[in-house]
Length: 248
Image 1: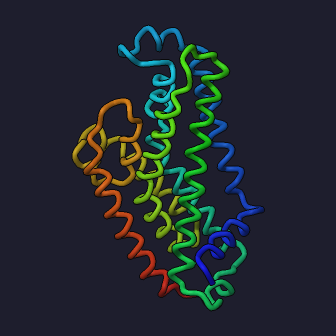
Image 2 (image 1 turned 180 degrees about the vertical axis):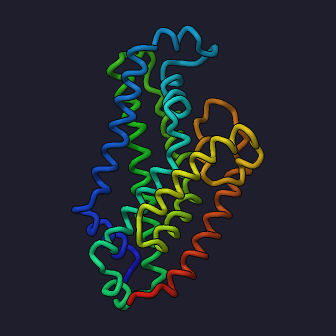
Image 3 (image 1 turned 90 degrees about the vertical axis):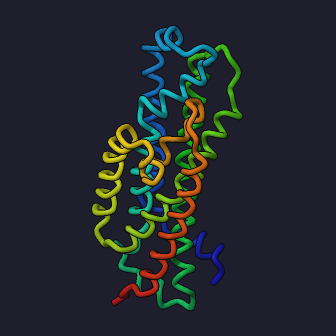
């Protein structure tokens, strides 16, 4: 069975799942929060902004840092992977899937790709919600599409490691609460790591997305390298363990 077939099969299995509702609720919540924030504080934010910052820059920064999107995104990804694997546990379908003439590595990797794709959709919807806020507020500047799509691209790049970690964790635990709790704890700890041990944050995958706002200068070359190393490491660990998964 081809990887592409497994990918679409995974998406089909989520048709009646909670994951689609989750993908809509989170961006809708962030969009509403940013609209309320700018409705109340827009003039203040403009008055106190650094020279050269546009309304669109301020909106992006408020979303990423004040609202905490850059901090909490890894937790959202953990939830996506937990929901992705919970379908198999709820329907008790692992035996049927793993008895098919298909390599277990392909099944595992297809889960990783689907989770990564759904995470990318979440990130894109968050960005489009920000653009909607700007249009409703009537920002005087044109939409800075290059900055906003760069924002999306950097986030997708920086979630590779955390995606591989939670693909692995969600494949281990039958109870979806456990990997979600780990994601929550990882995010809470990231705030301490980022602001107390900035060098350590470059090795801590739950902190990687914090470096992606693109407006406040951060040297991310080292973070990108560590991100890819951790992604490959945890994909390897996950595949090795998934091959030995007990399906009885």
